[in-house]
Image 1 (cartoon, helix red, strand yellow):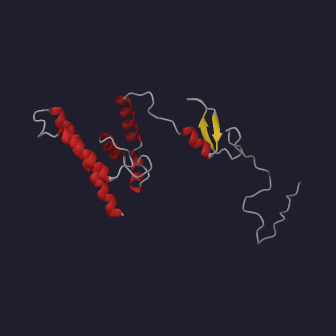
Image 2 (cartoon, one colour; image 1 turned 30 degrees about the vertical axis):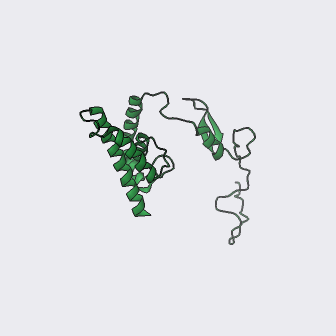
Image 3 (cartoon, helix red, strand yellow; image 1 turned 120 degrees about the horizontal axis):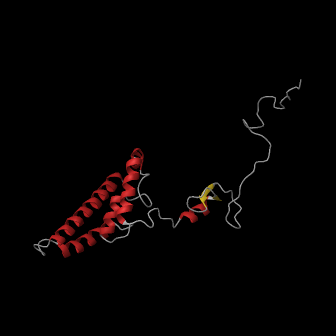
Length: 177
């Protein structure tokens, strides 16, 4: 009958952490040539392949920088895929309340980004730029200047809606700040 080995830890203060051991731990390094950081972020080597690269966080961000989920899809296909995923993952929309679900750097919602795109502005445009762009574009398609032109009326309505979305967001930011 073999005897259990007695521990050399005789109480407090504890010299070792709970569950710790003195064995060497194998750490996988980043697969990027010349990097000596730990590779903790898996990235696929090719589509539909089980093989993975292991990168450090900096090189994983670089690897994923140009990745476009909707690449190669038409506008309708991309919209359908987005709708399907929003339907399947609707429970995660709650995180939008905390500001985690917005696009870009988190300062603008997806609707705001679409409105800025319609006004042909960058995501970091301030409200004065938004007003100028709205007024300039609205003058071109205003129904009083183009009576009977349905396309101009639709464009004017889209511009009005975009401006309302951005104005409401600006008011929310002023109220919070």
